Length: 187
Length: 181
Image 1 (cartoon, each protein chain N blue to C red):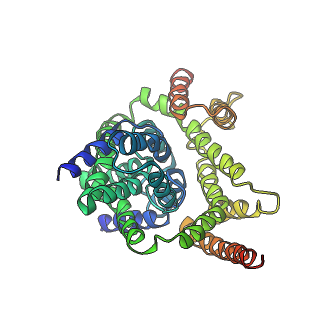
Image 2 (cartoon, each protein chain N blue to C red):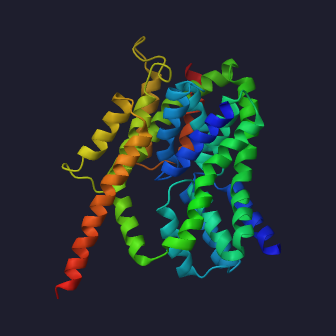
Image 3 (spheres, rainbow over the protein chains, first blue to last red):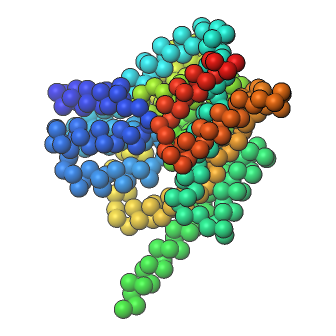
């Protein structure tokens, strides 16, 4: 029980003080879990993160569940998860109450009129950076272009697009794995 | 009824949300703005700005905000949306721990994700494009000054080429908005 509470508190602090989403909190989790508490050895931690990264859902929550389970079982998993999300929920609830009250205030409206176009830029920029890091060539550019066309122009639910993309990627991965296996057998 | 819809929407997003908070943005936008009409695009943009500026996972911030707005300010809506988003994670992490923890499956998964990445990038780009409308750019095409377009282009350059801090950019454009409008 003591460990579960420690997990809750560690992730609570991380949830309350990290700005910028999942990846920004990773170094804080490492510091708390690997360096300070020494709950998990360094190499195991990074192996674990590699698995967690490939899961859908909230990255911070997946990490909390995994670390919590590894350290203190089911109790630990839930303690860590709650610690990671309670600060968010509390802060947003407070802000949402205030914002719903004041969003028609002319000063607030002016400020957010300036912020909205910036938000659009903040969404477009990382998507282009992602295309660059995924090493998209002129040939494979058809994938993101089709995705944009289907969602933005045809208004098809992104859910279907993701499912189709998963199916396609799985086939691609299976082919790569088979090729890798053939190479292993030959020499 | 609205609670069931919230539950269904966020469980779905929890299952299909590959690639982090920004990738979920497109899913959330489709359901919340287009499908159920819980908020319009300006509200959506405001919510993204608030979620970006506050600590914690962006998608949890978004879920909490959507739950609150969709139920006209009910805390239960917030809690339900946030927990619905986490529910698939709970199940999946357990399955992974119990069943699939082999190197072979892991390699397959990594390669699948590699293939998925370009599509996710397109997904995020589409979310940004859908927000380029007269609601978020109210002065577009009116008069010779297009402050909103200038803000968007400058923020894009700062973010893409110089990796400027997003919170800094949001605060700065808020200040510009205050003085310009």
